[in-house]
Length: 499
Image (cartoon, rainbow, N blue to C red; front, side):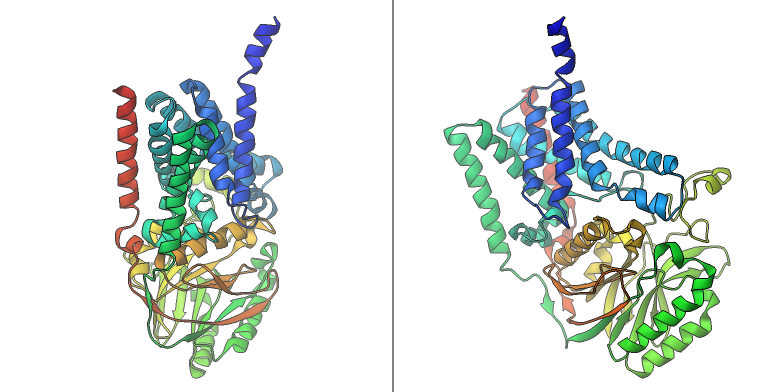
């Protein structure tokens, strides 16, 4: 009887270890920045997967993913419950549904690697597992609209490895971390030659990063440009209340007056809680007063299309003319609802006064303002780096407007800032970021924080940027080289098992 009980309990021990490894992994990202965990936690799962049957490997992967996204994206509850507002049971159910869905990628990864890869050895550690994990990360970034949050590579914005980002992008960084995870496994289990090979691989990766860090892929172009970022810090639960409309407009008018003289002034996402079409006089006054002081204004705004039906989440550039960019990658169940109309009212928990937004055209070009070509992005649209490649390649400066107040005082805003920093590194360009209550920042072409506004209060952040031109290898080729190498490595590892 005791033997049977031990047999029944045995799978729970590795599952608990996998859950713990996954729950620790978010600490590798901002604001904690314990980046070695991005190597150690995947290595722990690789170790747990060894010599496992496909079904148990799937369970281990699922537990790891549940810990990963449960600990890493719990803040979704704040947006749904506190600012939705949805009842607690529905908020918890929706968060658990997201976590369960994301965990399923790691469960499938476990099953596939147990079924088709060698059970152990270098082909598994250095080819099969890193390649399979890399391809899974890429898939979860676009399947069913995609959720690329917490891709491993983002954890490296402050390490030497960030120098690889302009060459191979964030997914290439993930692959390098996974290769080192395989090396860590070899150091733990191997002997003599295997350990030397693991150390040599680590030295090669970090030595290459040091050399690449001395390479400049883009060059400054033209004179420095002064910029100002406006941060209104309107509480999210008050923003869309009708009696706050006029005070909000007055606040941003005042902040804009303080920023006059800066060549470029940037407002956050949907700064004014009203359709731009309904406040033409207000926008005209901002445009005229700013232009008279040599300033162009770029602001997040909601706008109604000419057909009187489609609503866009946009960026308006108040230059000599008014031009705009419409958000292309909308957030499911927040900005649009992929369900029949009769259930929309029940599902619509975000307190916005409009039903579905319309996605912008994929063929939009850079915005022209302040003598610069701006590559715009709105909110978590900047997490889809490959979708921004065409715009970034034609730009001098990146601009992101966002509203992370949806997630309260949680790690979400710092994770998002880290994503923005990675976009700047990949493109080799400055990035100006305006948030409703933070983190508003000016980010340098190496991902450095040039200037940061104080969080949770009204502020005008001032700084200077320089237009940069030239194309990094990643802007030229995107993710394709890394994905093709991953496919080739995975095919070779699978062939080694069958041969």
